[in-house]
Amino acid sequence: MARRKRKESGLDLLIAAPWQISAILAFIILAGTRWIFPSMVGGNQVLGSFMIALKPFGYFVATVFGLIACINYFRHRKNFSSPQNVPPMHHVKPRVAFVDVNKSDDRVAKVWEASSNRSPFKQPESKPEEWSLSLLKQLEWKRFEELCAAFYREVGLRAETIRCGADGGVDAKLFRGDAAEPESIIQCKAWNFRPVGVKPVRELFGVMAHQKVGRGIFMTTSTYTKEAIEFAKENPIFLIDGEKFFSMLGKLPSGAQRKLLSVATDGDYLTPTCPSCGTKMVGRNGSKGNFWGCLNYPRCKQTFVMREAPV
Image (cartoon, rainbow, N blue to C red; front, side):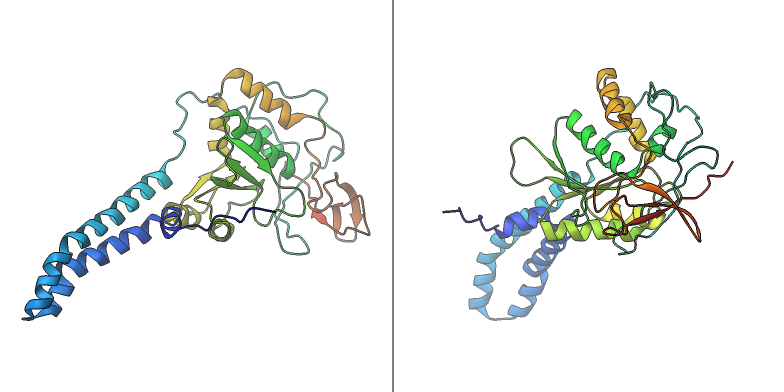
């Protein structure tokens, strides 16, 4: 017989909640104990004696909530320190750039460009021998997700990626040790044409609340808008843009860097993967220009726009 899932206590939920909730509760209890309730007692000696006896307990509870707020604040604000020695960025012209494209089912925006002077299927004659920001931006969306998960495995966490077609707003989950529940969830966006706005960051926070996960990590090859950055600061969400991730890769030992480079560039790392089927897409010609189509068409009608990259 299957074991019943342990019901979470109110304290568990409070610890997982944003720090502002505990801070507000601490202030309300403190204000009630110190000012509001004493002013309501008036000259009633019985209630006055009761309030005097109750004050220490009220101060104690307010202190507990205040401590929880402080712990949550510093825990949620904890992030990766910026590497001091960042390897030089090699300015290599990307063979594949990105353009904003909305999927037909409007669940995910994937973006693609392909150079007009080369076949979209032809891979580079030689594999890159070191990391560069340009290489990071060339990775197709699925390979970028796999790289993000592999990075966290290298720093000692257990990372599980989500199979194609069933991400539910999450691309990977991070676990510490043998824990059954994730400590963080990751959303990845291999976007380069435009910065990530506040909407997908807010959606990640919604998934965190639904799955009762205390921290979210948003990773992109692009940048973030001011609104997205402000929203993340107010909530337990850590934003990693392309330059930040490149710096984090450069901070790893050389052996780990080579291992992740092999993960990123193994096989075809330029051609996009169908988000529904998990197979590599193929170039198609349409009335409105070239595009990427699923190999399983017409059973799968997923498409990405393919545009010429600017010279």
